[in-house]
Amino acid sequence: MNVSAGKLVGKCPLWTWVMMGLALASALALIDWENTGAAKPFWMFLLPTAFGLLGGIIAALKKSYGWALISLAFGLLAVQLLSVVVTLVQGP
Image 1 (cartoon, one colour):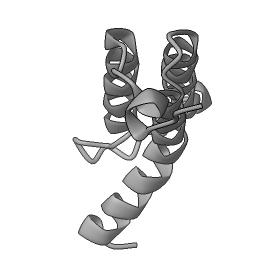
Image 2 (spheres, one colour):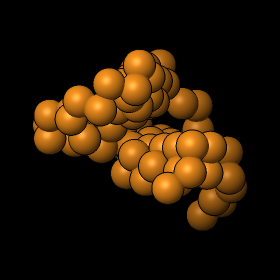
Image 3 (tube, helix red, strand yellow):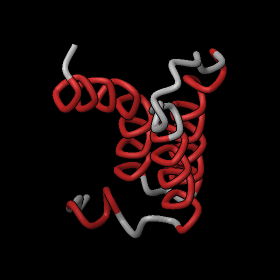
């Protein structure tokens, strides 16, 4: 059996890219850009993970398992990384 990196990752399906873009957009929507101090609804924090999961499912169905893992990790880590970046930029 010949397994190479190209076979494991394959081409990234278009809808996986769309879902990762939506995960990024929904994570950026969590930032208080106008400094109002208004709390975001709890369900908004679940959107990046949900979009990452959907992108992973789409990639897995297209037999692109590497991209499925990347999409899932991106969705899971988007809010956490955004929190670190905002803390570094604005301070605690």
